[in-house]
Image (cartoon, rainbow, N blue to C red; front, side):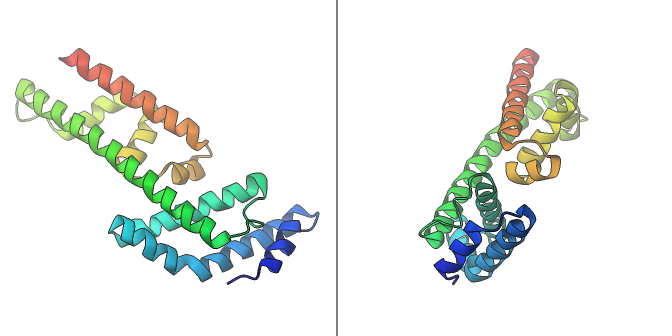
Length: 188
């Protein structure tokens, strides 16, 4: 484990931002080497899937690093191990919440597909539902919907890739779901 005195040296850092960034990166790499397997095992116990557990730990480290970049509180935390365990638990809880929301949405889409199949015949497919989503939603809303709901992605990963704040992405998804629900109600 990392010695707490080492953490204080890193957190007090040097005035040069690049040098501090290198030290922070090295700290988190060492923290992952020290705790990664244990955190993955904990996430696995909560999720029951090793790949999701790996994703949860990766997302948890991204959250911790982002918190460190924003307010410099992680490196001086008196119990960094306990902090990381809590971040993983919260990340797992958020992943489950996203999965439940995705399942509700997919159930709604499936119900719509069944209804449209009855109306339009057997040639109607889920591919056409994707087309409906693309027609009803803006490109940005559809991108968030596709990544978060259909591909079971995370806000943090999409945020990192697009450069858009996770809160903004969440609002886009909520707006997209509202538009689709309204469109489904109009189709009835």
